[in-house]
Amino acid sequence: MRITFCQAVLAVAIAFNLLVLYYISRLQQHVLHRHRDHAQPSPRQQASPLRPGVTVLIREFEDFENYVPDVVRSFLRQEPELPVVVATDRLPYPPMVLPPAPNVQVVLLKPSPHQPAHTFRPETYVRTEHVALVPDGVKADLTSQLERMLEEFKTSQSKVEMVAAPVHSMTPLRCLNLQVNLKEWTAEYAAAPPSYRLCTALKGEAVLLLRTKDLFNLSMPLAKPLMTSLFIQTALRGWAVRILDVSFSALHHPLFTSSHNQWKADNLARSSRLQLFRDFGIKRVVLEDGKEQWFGCGKETPRCFGTIHDDTPEYLYQNRWTPPCCLRALRETAKYVINILETSGVRYWLEGGTLLGAARHHDIIPWDYDVDLGIYLEDIPNCELLRSAESGSIVDEKGFVWEKAIEGDFYRVQYSEHNHLHVDLWPFYPKNGVMTKDTWMDHRQDIEFPEHFLKPLVPIQFAGFLALVPNNYRAFLELKFGEGVIENPEYPNPALKRLEKEN
Figure 1 (cartoon, rainbow, N blue to C red):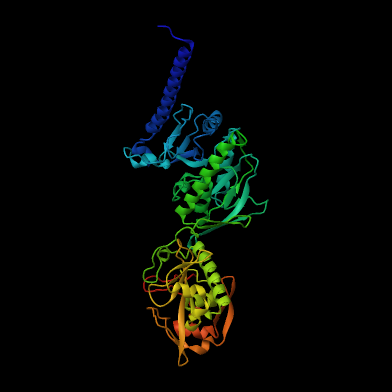
Figure 2: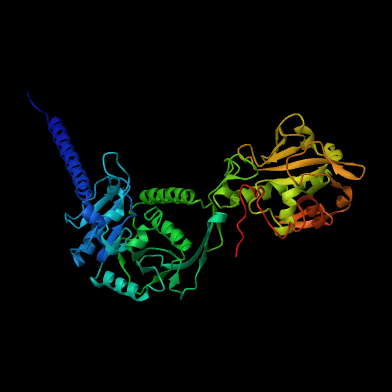
């Protein structure tokens, strides 16, 4: 049997591919075995005190293109016994060819059912008193770089909890001030003057050094994006970072060699950032240039909280207030509805807790979850949307949903079909000089009141626009809620959850 030239070439190609697959499989098994070899520290090692020194920890890199092996080799050339930990969610593929040194370890952070829990905790492997968080693509040029960082840290540790060494890149390292308000679901960045070296957050690439115990006392020490996650947690603890004169060079500019890989990395970074803010419960981010980023609900998503029970939304039990995306949607809906009422000739006024928010904050109460308006029953025929809502829900041209409420004889305007944040419209009518209505709720403020409070109605600043309210609204509110209600804020149902007074 004669073998043709094409058949021979095909046989060689198949054999070559099999060899390549075998080689890759062996590499991956080597990396996995290295993880397993180091993944079973003895109880004595886990309980042993941390020793002096620094461990290099590499966390943030992409499987599809990275320089992690080169980063590790550059540090080992300067200090061969330096402990290095590469922390990754899953086994890297294609496999990384790391130096075969016992002080270089790969740690898989994603638990596996056949391994004990401590094997997936990176603190198990970091046995030095300090740790240096090193980004991908960094090159160690001198033996003294980490030593200098450690010396600088020890001399300034009474003032700062972290020190940072910039990585030379196209974008210089910038010092930022970060304020995180979990109660209001918000993180705000502000640019520090160029000369400032003391910061609460950084923008750009840097090697960060801190105490090992401090790092692993954070609730999510290695969440990605690493620096964003780290500085949110440290800002909440009042920690500071000082930028040093020490610097590192970069192995490659840019980090990714193709626009496609850059695109993949950018998408993964956005996805990680979105997940991080969801995990931390941050829905509004103000960047250093003043631009806002929103990570909460919108027109096409459900609102951020579920059904309200006993007038106490779930976020109050979490010691948080109304998410800012929900407040934004309520403001938008209120402004829109009031504009429709005014152009239709429907007399309205801010009611209940909404009026209380206008009097106290010129805005919605920070923990409120809807907007209440009173309207004159006799004016309803003037508004086509209210007339149409009598026969069923109406979605108007802006996507707002107008409907007759199922709970009683009043109207509701929802932000959208998906998002049920809403404005309630309560029809009142005069009877012997007293404003009354046909549906009453089990709220202490839901009572009749003299019509003279509505003659005339007066404008007030509310949620960024002018809205109408009862004249002498202080007396109106105290009639409904009790004396001193404006100056003494309280949650809707204090028997279940009381507002903690700030000192």
